[in-house]
Image (cartoon, rainbow, N blue to C red; front, side, top):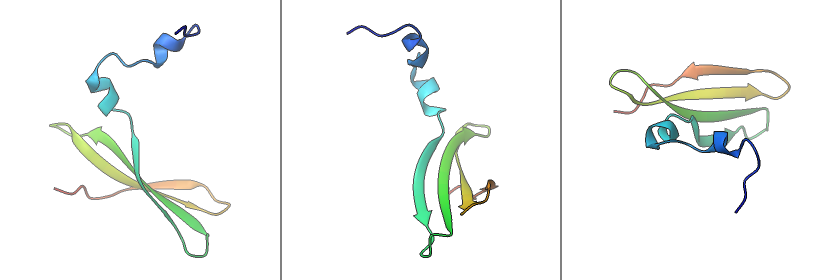
Amino acid sequence: MHHGKGAESMLLGDLREYVTIPRVTALRLAPDGSWLAVVVQTVGGEPPKYVSSILADRHGGGSRARPAHPRR
């Protein structure tokens, strides 16, 4: 299979790079559709561990992030 120029930059070199990609773990839409909450996990802290943040987007407004308390 032939990949176009630049495809190599999309490939990950090792597992450590893969686990540092932020990931969406949950979506919740308000019953009236006025907001959407998104839970995003990233790697942070020392020692490194997954940390969750909640992003809330109100219809027609901007996003804001607020850290969630990680589950232990």
